[in-house]
Image (cartoon, helix red, strand yellow):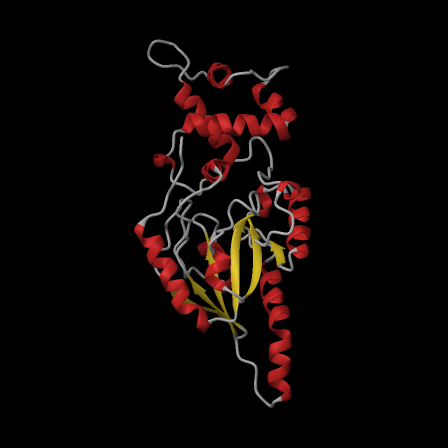
Amino acid sequence: MTIQWFPGHMAKARRQVTEKLKLVDVIFELVDARLPLSSANPMLAEIIHQKKRVIILNKADLADEVRTAEWIDYFAEQGLLAVAVDAQAGKGMHKISRAAELLMKEKFDNWKTKGMKPRAIRAMILGIPNVGKSTLINRLAKKNIARTGNKPGVTKAQQWIKVEKSLELLDTPGILWPKFEDQSVGFKLALTGAIKDDLLQMEDIASFAAEFFRKNYPERLLHYLENDTIPETSLEFLGMIAEKKRLFDRYQDPDYDRAAETFIRDIRTQKLGRITLDDPHESNDGEEQ
């Protein structure tokens, strides 16, 4: 299965971002803490050029804590400031404005020496669909300004949002890139809900997820299956889930489609624990995100 998703409004959003860059001081790049690399748009570097950037690892409450710390160190090695937050619960919000102030300190200090009064920092929030941009904005603004939804593609237009005296935000629609060179990136995004489920073959996503857990969190998979061994084939794996969950078709055969959907839903709702799908040690050394 080949996964691609690039609706027309995303191409338009990219053009709008390019046009608005001159209005902002800092880019807030929002990524999913469970996949900091796979949820980072590789087109971003060519779009924003030399703009200062803060990497915000959202949904940190869903990610493997050890891996999140490793990713923050990884970004630091690339010369990028990264912070981990949980926008849904409002945890870590202060880290974002502090990071922006740190990046702008030298410029504002220069203004002060020239007798100029520093103004509010203007930031643009960028991120792929369903990484929690609207939720983050509402938390920062302390009121429901941006539309939210647990599905990709909710934000469709840009809007300026005043957060506080020292920070103004420019929201933008989520932007995916036109083609995934590495199909595993598409599978990871699909597993975490960044791509609409009705565009996917859920059995393929479930098979990818099963292999990931087999390699990285085998003990959790065994506990989930309530079994001593993990089935070798995808069909056997989904069949075991169907048996455990009593998911049968009208002929009393295992319903593999429902088993796949159940497994993916259970992963997304943390019934298999906090996970991080990207490994910083497997990323390309020295490649800036």
